[in-house]
Length: 248
Image (cartoon, rainbow, N blue to C red):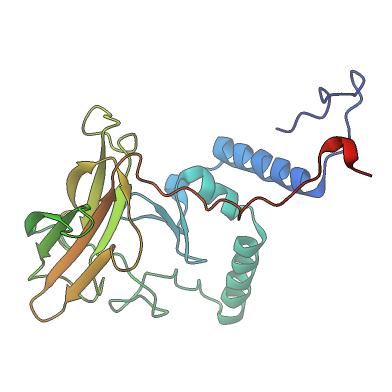
C-alpha cells in the first residue's frame, strides 16, 4: 500500500495527499487482497485455466496471468457490468442464461470458444533444426511439429508461449535456459528447453506458419547473443557552447 506518512519533508503522522493514480492503485490492491482472502475460485463458473497456464474470464473474454489478476478483474467495472447484464437477461427469460463457452455445439450456446473435454492422444511428432544466418551469423532454431489429428473446432492453429525457468515446476530453475511451449488440442502440450537469450522479435526473424493441408506447424526463433543488444541512438553531433565565463 502507498506510504502516506513517511515521505521526505513531512511531519510524522501527516502524509501528503495521494494522487488520483496512487489512490486507484491502492484501491485495486486492497480489493485484490480482500478477494484472495474471501473468494473460493473453485466455485467461480466464469474462471477457466487454459493449457498455457493462464486464466480466462469466460464472461468478459479477458486473459489474466495469475489468480490475483483475475480476482482484481472481477472487482472491476467491466466484469460487474457484464454480471448485471447477465442477471437482467436471466430475469427477462425466466431461466439462467448459458455461461459463455458452455452449452450445445463446439463453440457453446453463444458461438464462443468451448473448452475441449476430449482425452489427450499423446505427444505430436516434431523436428528441431539448428540454423545460422550466413550473413549475420545469427543463431536460430526451427521447430516443425506435426498435428495430423488437430481438432480445428477447438483451435484453428497451434499456439506457442515462452516460459521462464521460474514458471515451470518440473526441473530446478536454471537461469541459462528458458522454455518454449507449443500446444494444440487434443495433443499434449510439448516443451523445449532453449537458451535464455534475447529473442529477435522482428517480423522477418520471428516466423511461424501453419499448413492446414499437411497439418504441419513451423516456428523459427532467432537469438541475439549476450552483449549484442542494440543501444538506443545517441543525440546528433554536439553543438557549440561558449565558455562559462562569457555567457550572459
